[in-house]
Every structure is written in structure tokens, then in C-alpha cells.
Amino acid sequence: MHPSCRRKLVLFILGAFLAATGFLAAGCGDDTVYMPHVTGTTPLTTPAMPAGMVNKQFVEDMIIRKMGNEGLRGTPMVRDVRITREAGGLFVDMDVSRLTECVGVNCIGDNPGRVMQETVEMTQQFMSTLFLYPDVSRVQMNVFGNTDNPGDENNPATRVMFTRERSQNFDWSTLTPNNIQSKADDFWAAPNITAYLAKQPKDTGTSTTIP
Image 1: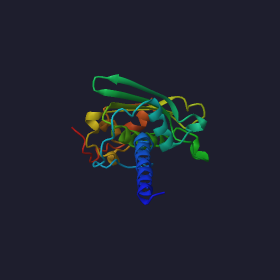
Image 2: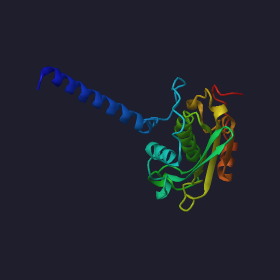
Image 3: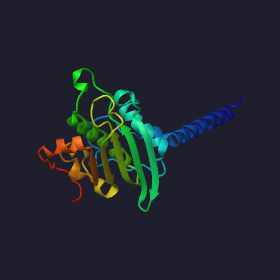
Image 4: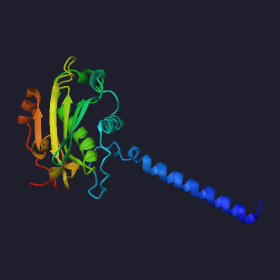
């Protein structure tokens, strides 16, 4: 083969390879957008993700990647995900189980403090990720398993809802079991957890959320 033809062939193959890798990167971007599983905050400098990526399967995969497949007493971590369109964008409504049960005698009993700690961790993990997407307007999380006692894993435990407005410039690391009621747009807890919270000191935290 003439050297000039060989050079043209090499350039053609190289160009085709670069085009193919660029296509794959663009098409598979939704596999790399999840935040690492660490308790903490989403940096305020994190750039927004593209719109149009959030759907039922996307949210279910995110939950499983962050918290695993199995919840309290073998219940599925993801119970249901509902996404509805509203005036401001998408309302993501998630039903999730509490985290996989512990071992030993501590797995039996009321333990509302553990319920609240898990609620805070999942709120930080899920909402800090979902609000990266500009078409998400509200996120609600419904947690099941109000105690550690057998049979209570299907009882509603807590409900937390944040709007995009409130999530703007919100430092998720400041969220605690004692201030989530005042920081969230909406919060509900089962009676046993409400009674526990009433006895706890109020913690306003040092959040940068809107008033």
C-alpha cells in the first residue's frame, strides 16, 4: 500500500474510534451521576446535571446504589417510586424501607433515635442527588418501619419533603434528627417517633437554607 494511502487509512480509523468513544460517553452519562455513599453534603459548587434524565428507573437505581437492595427484615429497599409532573417540574415521591436491620438485642424495641438517624442519612443521600437535576421541583421520601420490632417493618415511620426553593444553597451536612422538622418543607413522624422528638433538645443547626 502506498504510504499516503496508509496514512489516510490510519487517520480514518482513528477518527472513527474517537467518534465512537464520544458517542458512548454521551449515551452512558446516566451511569456516572450518582453521588458517593457518604453521609454528608453535596458541595455547593457541584454543577447541575442535564434535564430529562430523572424517571422511575433512574430513581430506583439511585436508591439501590446508595443503600443496597434490602431493607429492614428483608423488605425491599425500594417499595415504590412515583413521578408526577407539576407546574414547577417533577415531583419525585419515594417509598423506601429503613436500612438493613442490625444484629443482636438492639434489633428489638422501639429505637426511634435510630429511625430518625436513618431518615436523616437517606434524606441527605437521595435529595442532595435528585436536586442536582433542574427539572426536579419537589422530592418526598416516605420511610417504613417505625420500630425495630418484628411486624412493624411495614408501618409508616417518617415522611420528609423538600422543595427546590428550600434546597437551593442548602448544606445537607447540617441536617440532624433534631432539626429536620424545621428544615424540611414538610415533615411527619409516627406517634412513637413524635413522642421521642418532643423530648429532644431543639437543634437549629447552621444551615444556609432560605428563611
